[in-house]
Image 1 (spheres, one colour):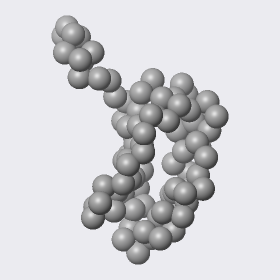
Image 2 (spheres, helix red, strand yellow; image 1 turned 90 degrees about the vertical axis):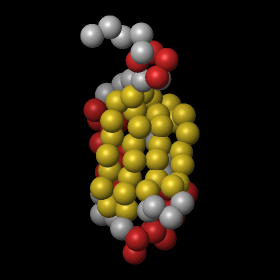
Image 3 (tube, helix red, strand yellow; image 1 turned 180 degrees about the vertical axis):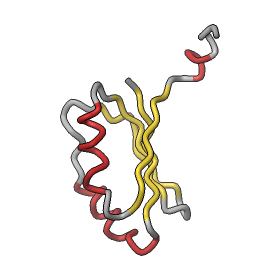
Image 4 (cartoon, helix red, strand yellow; image 1 turned 30 degrees about the vertical axis):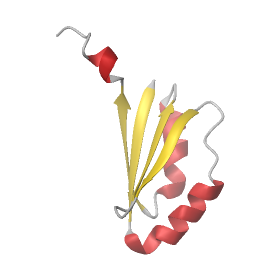
Length: 85
């Protein structure tokens, strides 16, 4: 399943978060699509595929002391417009 993670970190934790991202290893079962830093917003974004909730915990855990992680399942807009409801 595809997920978007946006992580809002405290401005005073910027250096620690950047250093953590430099060395952070996603769990081997997670396929990272891309990572971004929203410049001037103190938010980092990761788009990835994961199959279980345990992977999500392993991703957000190391960052918990520096801010708030938000994760949402996602699908392409092209797929979403084909869904009938």
